[in-house]
Length: 96
Image 1: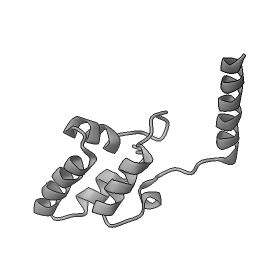
Image 2: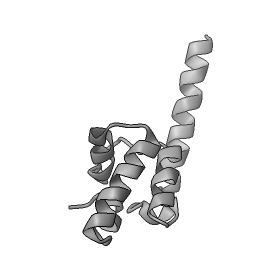
Image 3: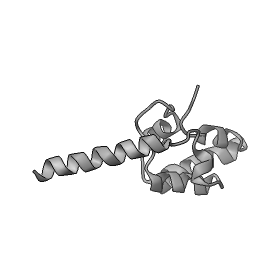
């Protein structure tokens, strides 16, 4: 399976007791439900959803790594340009 983020892998490397405590601490710090956190852990590379940057930073701090280390994907320059063009065309459409 190609997960978008390697959160599960990082958690599974922890001893069982620390795994449970860390997972609960992350959920509490995010101020999200356990179900939302599990969705974050199970996002697939092809999914359009992403973890909000601030949440990803919080998760990374608890797992003692950087947010970039949690990503299992690379953002292509063409994708970024496409999103910029889409946003600007939506904005101009709404202004008309």
